[in-house]
Amino acid sequence: MGFFRKSRRVPFSYDPERQEPLIRKSICTGEMTAGFVDKDTGIFHDLMRLADEEDVRRFCSDLGVEHVRVIY
Figure (spheres, helix red, strand yellow):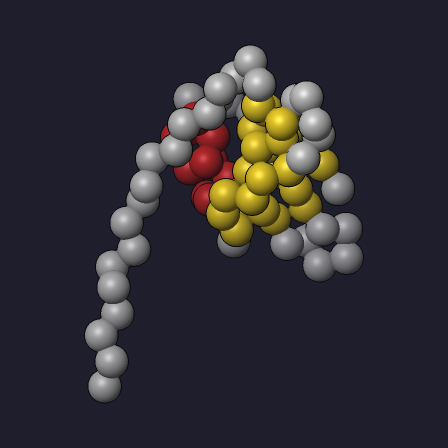
């Protein structure tokens, strides 16, 4: 028998002038990952894996935006 930790949602912050929130989606599997891309370097920083559209809506509401760009 094991004990499971209740997952805590950690609020995240970003600098809108230096980073852009986006979702990276796999063409083959459809797997979605939410994160930020650095506008200067173009490097994507993973934050979390998204399982469904509810996770996408939650990610957008946490950021306070209505739509996040999707890249493939």
